[in-house]
Image 1 (cartoon, helix red, strand yellow):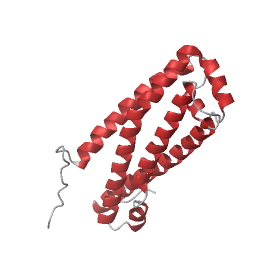
Image 2 (tube, rainbow, N blue to C red; image 1 turned 90 degrees about the vertical axis):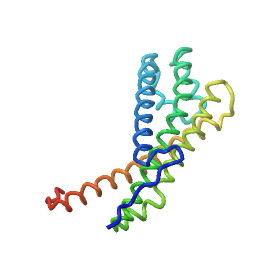
Image 3 (tube, helix red, strand yellow; image 1 turned 90 degrees about the horizontal axis):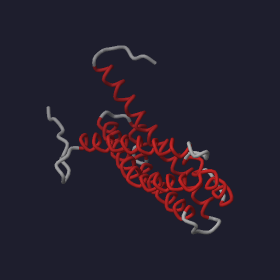
Image 4 (tube, rainbow, N blue to C red; image 1 turned 60 degrees about the vertical axis):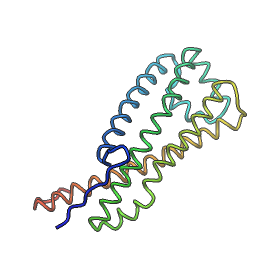
Length: 192
């Protein structure tokens, strides 16, 4: 019986270690963004999510007025901090999607494996649309950009959220499948 050995990356880290490091970075950056978001809401305006779904230059102007100067600074800080966050969550979920696909292939889970041909790329799509969205918001908050930029940024936000929800769903599906196989191999009844 041969045991599959996971090749190490150029930095000497296994996929499992990369997932741990990227997962920790994602959580840490998400906590920092949540703290900034709470401070942003304390200015009397919406959270950064309110900006993401503003949809028009007029609504962006209203949000900026509600935030005031301090809120605008916090929003820009949040948008800049979101760049390393999108790198960490994009890489984490792409790698988790690949790991899920590999698990599915190794265990004959055809539907999970077939969805895995697309799911890892959805994490990259989400991060890419997140980047386009943030650049748009930074331009608008800096007083630059045309009126079409706000609807464009909101459309990017919608694509980002759909893509990341799909890849998260795929990874959760993989985790549930992994747990079911473990239970089955131990002879324990499955709870539905």
